[in-house]
Length: 261
Image 1 (cartoon, helix red, strand yellow):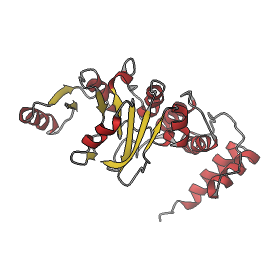
Image 2 (cartoon, helix red, strand yellow):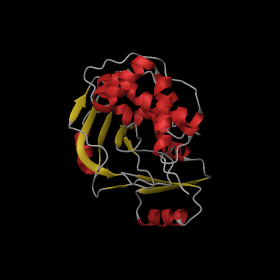
Image 3 (cartoon, one colour):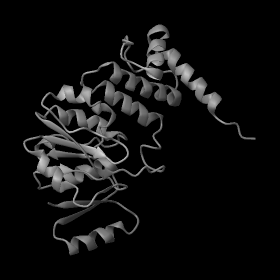
Image 4 (cartoon, one colour):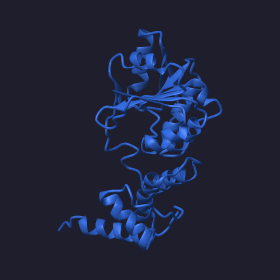
């Protein structure tokens, strides 16, 4: 294996620490670059990677010791293996040869993260993460999937996600949320009722941040199979439209916001 550490113009001690680790272990490769953001950092690694398979670990997160050994034994002839995230995403042990089946049944659109996956290197031929996009994985993952013939999911949770209140996703603004919605609308993947309702929630957030601008195409939702709040929301959507849902959601948030004196 090789470990590529990307110093994306870090202003602290990270560059020195990376170089020190590279001296201790010949498997570690360090690349220093000007700050270009997460997409640019990942692309810098993709440009020099030598391995047959690729995985990403974000800077706030960590892997269990020896996590990759059993996962690599499972990969067999798969193009992509997705494994569970401790306390955040629990997958079952399954194999998919129909990519659209994987997208809908696993609701993969809710976890398009670049991390927690092992990719065959060739999937990235001609594909890179888009610079300047906050939810860059939502743009890239569907393109990678369309090149896959076989996907495996694993119940093993070796990836550990650290929620950072100062992180990119936690601080997404209206522009970033609009990018996320556009990535979902334009990805060319199949859309069932659950996926559409997932996009409705993003549209509501976009409306709340950016004002009355509807990007999501209209769709009638079948209520059969939906339960709880999703069923109520789908009924309101079918009856009154998405603008009504957006207005109601904004009003509810206003009333729920505590007033400080």
